[in-house]
Image (cartoon, rainbow, N blue to C red; front, side, top):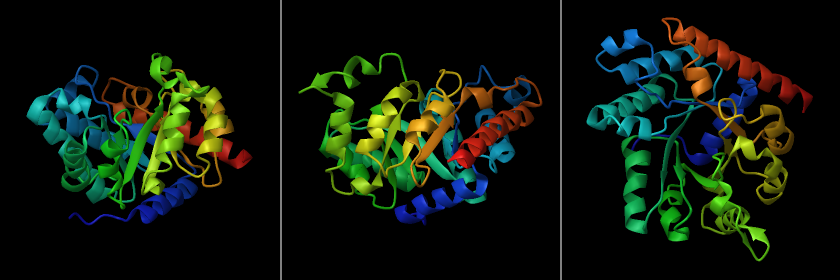
Length: 280
């Protein structure tokens, strides 16, 4: 088994980073070869070359990185190798940073066990996004890794998110049923939950259900979510938020200065976070 921090240390290390950096920024490494600077296409591994420069330029401003695996799987074996190099670089150079595989896995038990093995053991990610639709036995193989974090989809930021998540059962929205049920599962303390920034008006109610869990919040920036609104309703005693930004940081410039531009955008967000934290 790889040598990684136990969950309580992961969470404590995350909280320590947040307090030290005055940031709860997660940078999504959703890399599209059609959008990266042209000069990187000459590299042996353009995806990794891009990621390395982004990470090196922003690691002191972010507390977590979240590669979306689809952006690597789309390029076949070479893309998967780029993902592998990226997580190994993060773990070796910046082991304090929290790493999330945004893969949205979830299947019958023995299949989920293999997904968990792939991301938690082979690739040594700290966390993995998981879909709850198939129920407890599809999530428990991930939760069995007591030293890892399972990030359950609760209320997503996409426009169709409420098609099912908002359906009411006994006058209770399905996403609230998911939250309440997940809290009854074994090792529920290892859970985080995805709540989209575009659904900030639901955060106050969600915080009442999961007051102590971290929330991974995508949708700030390109998708139009408000950092201020998310913080108003989502912050808890330990901050309890990871705010993800992808395109706004990655593609701040298409030129040779892309890493510098990415840093400037990350710095802008970090400074906004620092200001909001100071008011709390």
